[in-house]
Length: 289
Image (cartoon, rainbow, N blue to C red; front, side):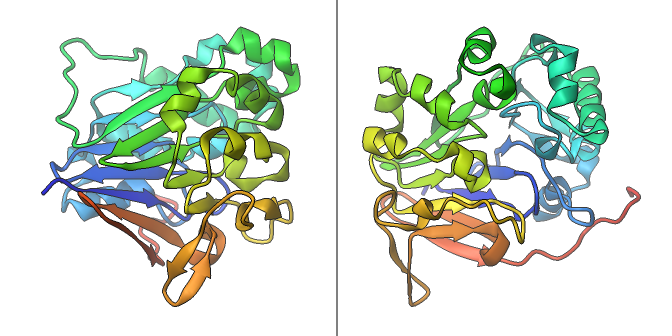
């Protein structure tokens, strides 16, 4: 039976999500990491491979912020068959520097130098057992909406579809970006009736808008990926205004959070799905092996 596992890694500040299907294919959404934990190394260990022998069917960089590309060294060591991102050159150098720490800016330059093309010659997509759509605001339009939020607002929103389940990866789109994107009927149709929403901008208040849920409907759960002790979580993500909720390990839950639940795993089957949590152990130090 076809199945898929969606992993939302606990990477403290940043984001990394992976989808592993029953054919062994990997779709990686961003590649944040902790100092001593690499999601890409975890995936290699999951398949009992070295990083150099790990094949990623598609890497999606939602937007060029350093906390979404921090594991770039391991990404470049693996084999990425295809990538989906807006070229770094789409943004001005000043926009990239203003939106990143010096270290984050260096991550992006390394990524851009390592992967020059969207699709390599001779590429054929893996035999995914799921479907996905993606939407984003053009960079020029994002500048018009709010020049200070151009990188966040032009980010890729990914919609994963498996059987009758949908998971919406919202990237870091801000409130004024949603005002624009929610005028796209194709996006609304694609995202309608989600099972899970990965909350915009890690769950920050600046990205919360009730309009998103009014347009696409309430999921069972929202997932926040804010770092520990970050005080800017939008509390609306844990209310009945934004989600249905369900019993999970003898507790009624609406919002799940990597900062309190650890790594969140969503197992998708033909007619069912379940959620699990794991506290993954450190797997990498400051040097690579």
